[in-house]
Length: 283
Image 1 (cartoon, rainbow, N blue to C red):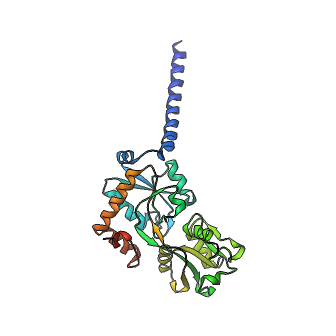
Image 2: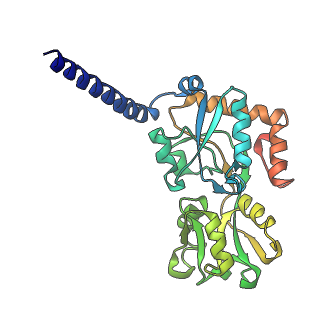
């Protein structure tokens, strides 16, 4: 009898623990997009930032696997002010807003351009960097204008601002390029490999990535960059709409690093004198 009772109690305890664990995970994920999470993040001591770890120079890995980049430095500088560590988590970039909503990550901080579609899903911090889309090609391809891409193959990253621009403004590229659709890549690194190998003729890419990547090549003179007619882009930190405290804290910290010279040092480290930040222009 005692053995039977002990067995029942054990099963009940195990089930209770399993149920509680399962419900806890579901509850956290379900409520992440509905509550202000700042106090929870502050208490646990770290914030989880979702990144594409191939996006040079914003977030990318060295040969030893260490994650470095402009946004890595800036995120660490911002949360250092609150005594909060930053945990960077590599995500499928095409699923970034889903990861945020589900509570897998707390922020999207990875050269995340503001646009109406994204603003409908997330809250953005103040703009900390301006950028634009450029068409990159090899000089030997003799593509010196946007019009020269007629019947040529164009590469873009899946879910990127460049892809969104191609689809939103079809008269610029989509209606003229080969098959009327761009070649999609999971990362710009793979896209550059195909460009160099001649598998695509042009690559629409963020100017910050293009400038940095080309400058690190053995023969940067072999590449050409053409400004696109697409609107100027603004980089901001993406967060859940319910995280009103997070937005206020991030904005306050961004303004502080702009005032104390930290932002200027980070800009110069990664972009030299090419970086444009409205936070510094407003000083």
